[in-house]
Image 1 (tube, rainbow, N blue to C red):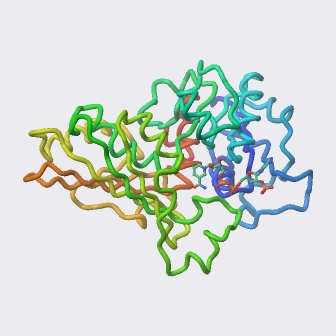
Image 2: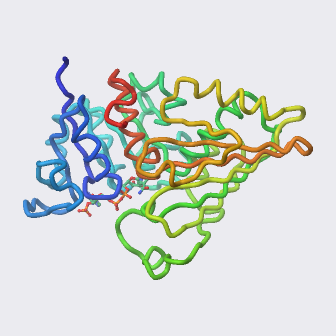
Image 3: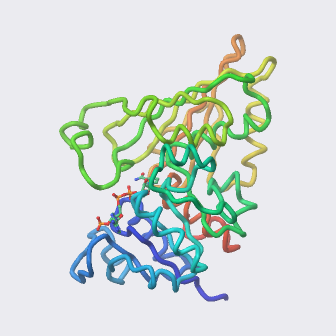
Amino acid sequence: MSEALRVGVAGATGYAGRELVRLLARHPGAALRVATVSTPADESREVPSLRGVWKGGFRPLALDELSALSAVFLALPESVAAKVAPTLVDAGVRVFDLSGAFRLRDAEARKRWYPESPELSRDGVVYGLTEMHRDELPGAKLVTCPGCYPTAALLALGPLVAANLLAPGQGVIVDAKSGISGAGKAPSTRTHFSELHGNVAAYGIFGHRHVAEMEQDLGRSVTFVPHLVPLNRGILETIYAQLAGGVTDADVSGALQAAYADAPFVRLTGSTLPEIQDVAYTNFCDIGWKVDAATGRLVVVACLDNLLKGAAGQAVQNFNVAFGLDEREGLE
Ligand SMILES: NC(=O)c1ccc[n+]([C@@H]2O[C@H](COP(=O)([O-])OP(=O)(O)OC[C@H]3O[C@@H](n4cnc5c(N)ncnc54)[C@H](OP(=O)(O)O)[C@@H]3O)[C@@H](O)[C@H]2O)c1
């Protein structure tokens, strides 16, 4: 058996980073060597949920230490990932970035939504929606993992756009509900328990950076309305679109079945609409849909766990494909 790849997690004490540590600590193809935090060395720092999962201590983020590894996962704030990723790539480390810092291909869009991201050669930069970019991953130097909201929307709509099943020139509406871990571990007034418990609130209308990411891959306008709901984890998106003339339920079903025939983490539920409770704590994205034959209206419902398929799980899935391992390794 070949030797396990030496890997590190930067931002290991965050919500996404903890999931990475948990997945990589038991991954048969990976040897987790370094896990970093934002503070100076503090051997006493513990993450209770990781007790007995990984025995190494947390260390301050040191680029020379990370540069000696085969692969590094960045679960850092965008501004920090924007600084760290290019240095690691230059050192020959394969980087799996969970932040949005380098997701947008268009320089103007990147400047608008991620102003702290430096210009970077796009050579070897791969957008890590595994199911759509599987073939590019083995040559990737920097895998820029998709946002949690775009992952669900793009998996739901990507095959329909590619098969020209949606009405030309028309936008789509993505109405999303997200659990609060999507906002990271630092509490705010918006995410405080007493604000959220028993409440549902829309936010970010016409101002959420995930819109640019969805539009980049769909090539059509997206009206995106995210909501915070009182759950720890999980995203459910209800997506509204108009089908092209003559397109039927069978066409929609056929395109999705063909796209995901060999995709172990996409489950098509047909007219049985998916629910968050069935994907929470898994790397699955479940997709169901309904077509109104009389009007050609399509509603797709897609669900995933924002910290797994929407973050750490998808990053490990990309790592597996990039290094020629079984795509499911460490994820089932
Ligand atoms: N949460 C999600 O559902 C989700 C989904 C997809 C993508 N993402 C992306 O993944 C990244 C991490 O998100 P998260 O929700 O896990 O965030 P988080 O819970 O706030 O964790 C951030 C992590 O980064 C570390 N950190 C913060 N500032 C740092 C600095 N200046 N230098 C070094 N380390 C620093 C923190 O260390 P300390 O513990 O010492 O503060 C912590 O380990 C973000 O870019 C986010 O956009 C998140």
